[in-house]
Length: 536
Ligand code: AMP
Ligand code: MG
Image (tube, rainbow, N blue to C red; front, side, top):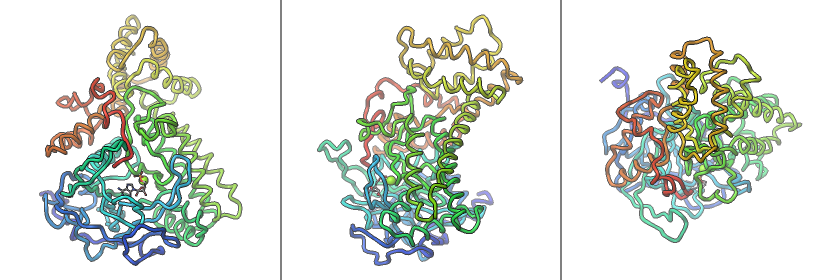
């Protein structure tokens, strides 16, 4: 046992602090019945116990960081992770929020199945809220059951950790616990309900406050709560901005916009599609939040979304994400406007979003291409022309950049067999290339090669830095589905392998090479691999 582990506590012995509950107006009846909760920021509500809580997966590094010991499969710590045990320092609550769903104001939503236990101190003194998703009904459950199934919980658990290790701003996940209870879901809303195993994810973030927490206050004319919530977020999560004031609200909105832009730029750089960018799924900290019917781009297609509910309008397709985040920030600006004498100043935040998005996307793309900023204008044209070139021959985004990294030294060296190298790359990364469809990507590769030759570093050095910018492993949709099917059959080995590899996604891991392969044909249209619903 190392010294860090010696100081680790089981979760049931950890001390929780509860500033959200202590500092904001909440409803304290404890009544779990579905209802409107005007006038309050949250409702105190205890998790509903489950039959047989047992640990399925644990995030070791996050546990170490939080000073929490990995618990045995069953026992008091796992009971706490399932909501069966509420310790003396916890004040469990469900937050009240609203949101725009698919562009329409939906009124009060709130934590319908997520219950926060409070926050714990990490080894560096920072504070982290622990929230149980699937912990039972709350006043915000509407007509649903407050539970979550194993498949969606596993997807949230693995993907939030995978995103973290890719360097994408995200909420984290500490544990995945099986409940021993069955949960009935009609997965494709086609009149075919099935009993599925239930599960609970303990997810972790400084706070889970969303744009929608502010929207509901403004929509209901609860300006005292709006101000209290804004001041709370600034004091606890943006203390560097100073004491809340109208000027500070403006700078705060700029900072939220900046962080949102950084998050979106990262999504675009790794090929992540959130799938449900409703305003209630937008974190006030600029973190990826609420992993539902998300997916990873395989063939490069800006119009792709995994979410079956969105097949008609494709509002949340990969290429729409930058625009939608801006739309969501405008909704947040509108919600914050009662705090300011002149809300026009919030436009600065929207400008900040646009500028930061463009510069961050460009910087990340240059890194992926192994280029240093030598020729700003020429390089901008080069990076902007790539998406179109990739889309035509259905090139797998992850494979393309990884293969390109490996090819960099050869591209620098060879001038006579460039086309041979391009063939190799396109064959390795493309799903289908009809005659002539690769003309644009070849042309682009010629331009890129010429530009690469202007870099001062050696081919080896360029390759090494590209390999740190282009992951070999991402959570391909079919890989998550395989882990789910095996976990449902009681075999956790695929989940464990994925967690292991996705922690160091830039390393080669030759023994797991097959997990970096092109999506197999059978997964092309398979539910769970190509299509996902919101049912979870
Ligand atoms: P989502 O699409 O998962 O972001 O959820 C949208 C809203 O529905 C949120 O208010 C959720 O808390 C709520 N919700 C989703 N699933 C359930 C469920 N099984 N039980 C209760 N509330 C739910
Ligand atoms: Mg949500």
